[in-house]
Structure formats: C-alpha cells, structure tokens
Length: 195
Image (cartoon, rainbow, N blue to C red):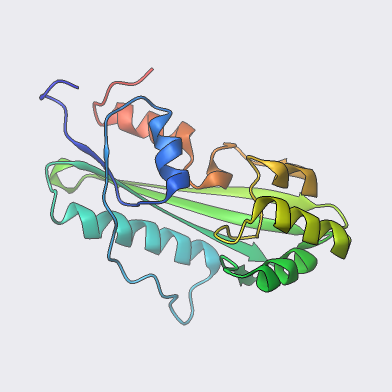
C-alpha cells in the first residue's frame, strides 16, 4: 500500500478476526489490546460489547495515533445471560443445552479510531435460532469441532451451522466476530482503498 495511506491495525490477535480482515486484501498488523475486559456492574450486554470494542481500539491507538485501529468485541446473550467462551467440554455441553430450542442474540460491536482521533462505532445484532438439540448430538458436535473458544460453543462458519433453524443478520461475518460490510465501508470513508 502506498505510504500516503495510514497504517491499518487490528486491535486483536483473534485468529477469527484476523482471517476476516484478511478478506479485504489490505495490509494490516494485528496487535493485542491490554484493555480491561471485565464487565461493569450495571451494563447490559450491548453496552458491554460497545465499551469493550472502544477500549480495545483506544488501548492500541494510544501508541499508534497516526494509524487506523479497529477494535471489536462480541457478547452472546441468552435471555439476558451472557454466554462466555466455554473453555471446557463440560461447559460447552451445558451452554448448548441451554441454547436448545431458543434464540440467542450476538452483539458484535466495532470501534474504528483514525488519525487525529476520528471515531466510528457500530453494533451488529445477529439472532441465532437453535433447533431442539439432543444431548448425544451436542456431544458429537463438540467432539467433532471443539468450539471451546467460541461464545455460544459453536462455529457457524463450519459444522455449527447444522445446529440452527435460522440466522438473522445484516452481515453474516458479524457472527464470526467482525462485520466486514460496515468495516469495509468505514475504511473507505477514512480513505483506505478497497473494492
């Protein structure tokens, strides 16, 4: 990319977000954020996702103020309960059992901070409706895909798609962690070329 364009930084080392941003064919660096990711006492799940996306972008941008920095966070919400990354097979099974036959809202927030502190914010809401799941098929799915690092305990871009009756979203990439339709339009508005 010519030197006239600001450097692009993803404030994350998430393999999922890196793979998504690579689809835009723009050079970028992935730098982890050290932002505090703990939840506030009275925040709802949308507010938490938005605050964390901004905190991640701001944490990296403060050391790279001539760059364009993208921060993103996602919170999965089942009837007001936050679904975290399960981390273990037992928690993944329990999470999918709770989701069985229900709809989970995934709030994917993005903040982009550009040179001079220009800030753009976005929140995508994706509704994932699960079919009724039997314990044996949940166990088979988790054994096959090991979705222990995914909120909701599934990978929609892979075998996890078989767990649903419907997905409603403005942007299918948001569910994986970075809504590329909004991101690509926002980067264009900040002067970065992309198709």
